[in-house]
Structure formats: C-alpha cells, structure tokens
Length: 317
Image (tube, rainbow, N blue to C red; front, side, top):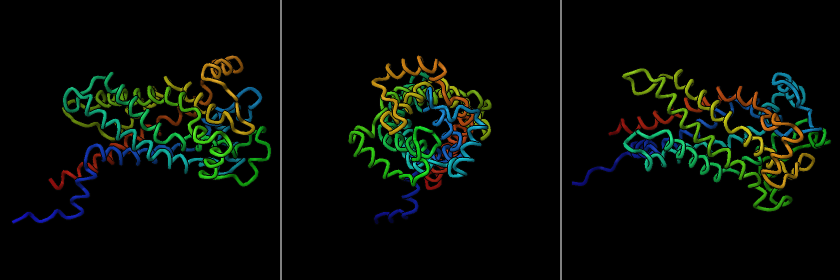
C-alpha cells in the first residue's frame, strides 16, 4: 500500500529548511532590517561622498548634516532612496548569503571547517555574484539619494516633483547610453565589494568562533551582535576608497553633478589632487557610525531567521 502523500505544509517546511534556500531567505530579511535601521546615516554618507571642490553644501559634521537633511526635507529626507535600497538589498543580501553557503560546499575541507583564506575567497565570489544581479538598482538608489539634496549645482531640481525608481531607471536608459548606463561604475564596485564581502565573512566567522563560550556551539545574541559589528567595521575601513569611487562613477553623467572621470586611475588622480587623500575617505565617519548597528542587526537577523527555517525542517524529520 503506497504511503500517504505528505501534507503541503510539511513539504513547504522541508523546502524552506534546505540550508542554501534558508540562507537565501534569511539574507533577504537581514538586508531589509539592516538598511532601514541606518537609512539616515547611509544617505548622509552618500551626500558626503559625492562632494568635491566647489560642492560643499554638506561640509558639515554628522550631527549638522542630519539636522540640515531634516530642515530641508523633513523625515522623508532621512528615508530618501531607502525604498529602492530595500528593493535592491533584499535580493542582493539574499543572493550574497545564499551564494556564500553554496560556494562553501565546494570549499569546505570537512563539514563546517574552512580556512580563513577559503572563507575570504567564498565571500569575494558571493559579493561579485550579488553585485552582478542587482547593480542597476544600486545606481538608481544613488541617484534618488542625491537628486533632492540642496546642492547648488542641481538648481531648482530639488524643488520639483522628482522621478521615482522606475522613471529614473528609464531616464538613464534613454538619455545616458542605454543598457550600459545602468552598469556605470560596476568595475570599482566589484573591485571594492569582492574584498569587502570576503573580509566581512572571514572576520565574522573568526570573531564568532572567538566569542563562543567553550563547550557551546553558538554564541548568544549579544556576542553575535559584537561579531557582526567588528566584521563590518574591519571590512568597511579596508575597502572604503572603492565605495567613494563607486558613488562618483554612478553620477558621472548626472546633470549638474557629473564628474566626467575617464577611468578609475583618472578619478583617483583628480580626487587626490583636488581634495587630498581625505577625498578618498569622505563620508567614512557616518559610515563607521552606521556599520555597527547595520552589520550587527544584519548578522543577527540572518542567523535568527536561518535557524528558524532550518529548525522548521527538523521538526518534521
């Protein structure tokens, strides 16, 4: 006599409890939570990054910059671009965590065991995969973050009704070079994201192992928060100049704000000549202030969601 078919809910729990799929779904949740928590600091960082000589409306401290944002645009200014960022970060983070767990299967010397170099490599590959899948949303998010800011070079544009995500994407496609316009700045982005994600995963796993009490398999929530904060700060500081280049190239052809850099080396030369080495680190203060809550909440959300989904599968086994 054939066995009765499995109930649909049991099949569903078994499916979402698969390690790679659980990591994929948990990564999406982690991305949305972490970006929303630090949206004001994320936008302020971008406004600092795109300034150069003659564009110094946001040459302010972090506190003054946030006050200016509030004064000019109200609470919406704090969240400007966050909707698009969440639309981007959910698949970006999901692909990143999911692909990292996928690549791990081929790099582990034994279940759960991997050298720091292998973790670095897996993280770098995961970073490249996630960027390639979601880059157009990232460049649109940068444009949305800037277009309503009170930069003099934007003239009256900030006072008019501004286009949303889809209209911005279509406008770039029509007016700035077609499909390639949506991938402008991809090279410096990949050059920064690959080592950033690799360092992030490698450092997190190392710190997580260090803070796990002897005899226990997993650290508590506070220790996970600490590991996430440390890994994010290390990775961001080491790769930050690439993030500045990424933002500059993303607005390279933007009306009023375009820099017209010809290559990565041309951009570095001009930034250092006009703004000094500090120009490569513009916005790093709000960036570091957001790293701790962002990465801590990201890793904690990821682990809690992933463990919940995996445990749903185990209940039925």
